[in-house]
Image 1: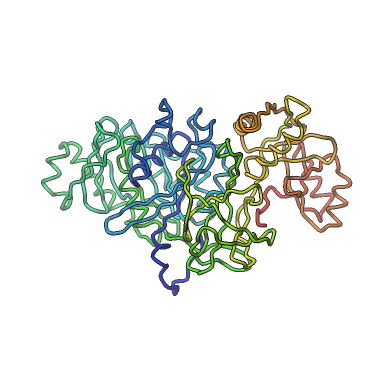
Image 2: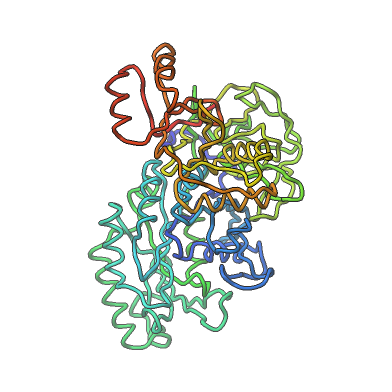
Length: 539
């Protein structure tokens, strides 16, 4: 997110009401349940289903790939758009549900290039976990504002001040409570809404019901004693006294800079604290922001439409073998049927059937505005990092591709199906689901991923979507680096190291290696050649 010019006029109302955000968390912190309740309170669904509930009717809406449903984890970022009525204003929420499993961090990283803020979900019993910390660092690199939700307060949880201290210490960000829990675990009855001076009481009997809200006139209001047991009320007053002394107030400017996070407490499974968090996103979440690009930045209020592809998902509908590019609109007012320029190929592209998403359900998008995420069905023309404009040669920057951490060789069960396998692998490479390298010497492919689970996902999808059983085997190589430098130096290097050279699906040269020593040797023997662990997907 870039710093906006304070002299700019206010955004058009349709753009100003957009809130585009991602949810980040460690696996099992309750992210998918929270997503579900957002959809419920946004009126997008009638019934919330749990992640591991039985029966088709109760599948959680944002986990749509077969393996996600089987395992109850999110392995693919899906985008959902819905309206949220907050007091006197109607907001449009564009929520991107990022993969919660640690093996899918690159997909998550790219997703965070397409949002203006992030909601960080923390398990009240576990505090800040490793994956949360990694994802937070990505948000920090992008200066994304963070709103925090401390979940599972109805279960045995850690001391609230301890959780806040841990966030401040581990993530180096100031924390300001927007609400405060009353009781913990079995004693948890609700929260005190600090921002609005309200008592919010949880209904354990109905998990989909909005909490009872009671207006309070300060902590000495006798109404409090009617609803809160004496021991919990005394602790609440003591805690909030300490909060006022020790923790900063909510400053929207500091939050926008990413140096302060407001925290709400609740229980997503009981629908508690969710509506307050949504109100917080509406009130404090940023409007669509300026987009970094070359040769100039893109302002959301520009008349001309522009957008960029941050994700490609193939076979969302296995019956139609389709491919959908997820596009974040960076500027303008888009209409179905518009002719856009595909900047990489310089070719015009009529966007005839754009879609909006509710997980795997989609509907035709007649129009969309800056900040929205639309899907463009295509046959492989659109890749991650592509920019679409109304003619200007702009290229959105900052969408990275990372070197994989695990490499394996892939083989088809039937050797005669090698061409089918190549087609499947190229599709997954273009999706960003894996890195696929074709070695200069020999046949076959080396596949690179971030974590072991991705090999299982790939094998499962290749069999399901292409009817092709495959097996992954150990590779002689353990890491990959992209090769950069002037052409003469690179040509000499590749000629002398043929047994290590491969090409990725874009045709870029890659150096496959077994040891860190090999990389050190290249840097020593070929000073004009650079080996990099990332490449920017700016095309």
